[in-house]
Length: 420
Ligand code: AMP
Ligand code: GLY
Image (cartoon, rainbow, N blue to C red; front, side, top):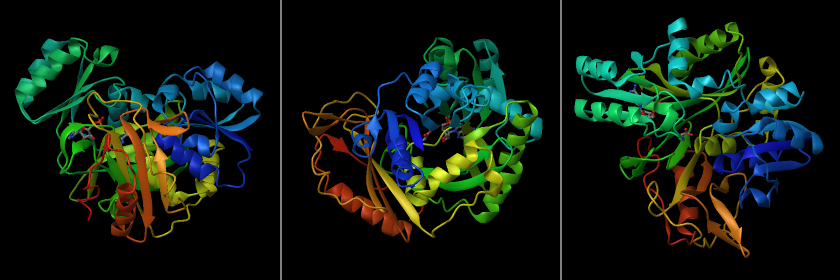
C-alpha cells in the first residue's frame, strides 16, 4: 500500500520511521517532510491545508492511506475531503477536531456528560471577564478560545496577571483565537498525557507520556512546544487509566457520536491527576510532539496496523503488543528558542550515531544545504532511546546527545527528573 503522511516535524519523522518498517507499506511519501524524513521516505511539496489538493495528489500517486500529523490540516477539514473522495485517512473531520480548535466546545461536551474538568466560563467581552476574575481570585487560568499554536494559555498565580491577560487577548494578541476567552479554575496535581485511538465507536489506549514544557532545567523559564518526553508516565497507573477511560474518554467519544460528528483518529487527553483522580485539562486531536516520538519508538511497525484499524473502523478487534519497555526523547533546540534564534547553522556528528529500533534521532526542523544538515527551526532534533527501564532509556539518549556536534544548539539535562 502507498502511504502519504502530512507534516514535517519530529512527530512525522517518528510516524514515518514506524510505518515504513511495516511490510504493508510500499511507497511512503511525506509532505513536506524534512532532512531526516528524506533519508527514509520521499518528500513532496504540497499545500497540506488544501483538502482538494491533498485528495488530488493522493489519487495521482495511488495513495491508499493518508496519515495527518498536525492540527492545522485537521482544522481545515482535510480529513473530510479525503473521506469524501473515498481515501482511507487517519485523523478526525473538522467538526470533531473542534475538541482542539475550541476550548469552549470541549467544555460543553464535558458538561453534557459530567466529565471531570476545571470549572469554567466563556466571555466575548472584557468587562464581565474581569468581573469573573475579581470574584474568583487567583490562581486562575485564562485561555484564548481558539487555536493559538499552544501559546494562548496564561496560568495566572495572581489577579493582576489574569487581568492583564484579558486585556492582551481582547486587544488581539492571539488574533481571532482570542476573540473569545475561557476562564478556568486552576487545577492542582501532576500532568500526564493519555493517547487513545478512536474509530468513531471503539476506543483503544495506545500509551501514556509526560513532557517538559518549560525551556529551563527544573521546569523553569518560558513555555515551549516541549523540551522532552518519556513514556510510560508513572502517574498513569492501571487504576488511573481505567478511571480516565470510564469518566473522560468514553463519555467524550459517546457524546461526539451522538452529535453526529463521530471522533476518528487519535485523541490526546491532557490530564491533571490528584490523589489518583484524573481530570481533563484539554484535548488535542493529533499526536503530541515530542510525545509521538516516544510512543512510536515503543510501538514500532505495529503502529501502521493500529492506525489502519482506526481508519477502517476495526479497532474492536485490534490489540497492542506491549513490550515492557520505556522510552525517552530529548529535544535539541537552537540557542534562543523559544525566543529569536538563528537558522542555517551546521549540525555534525549525526552520521556516526548508530540508529536502530532502540536509538533514533528524529528530525524536527532540519534542512540539507550543500550536502550538510543544517538547523531550520527552533526545536531541531529529538534524540530518542528505548530501554528496559526509564533510567536505561535516559542514559542511552544522553550518550547520543553527547556525540552530536552542534555548538549553536542546547538541550535540557534533566528530562524525566520527576520520574527518576
Ligand atoms: P493547554 O494548552 O490547555 O494544555 O494549557 C497549557 C498548559 O497550561 C497545560 O499543560 C497546563 O500545564 C496548564 N493548564 C491549563 N489549564 C489548566 C488548569 N485549569 N489548571 C492548571 N493548569 C492548567
Ligand atoms: N507537546 C505538546 C503538544 O504536542 O501539544
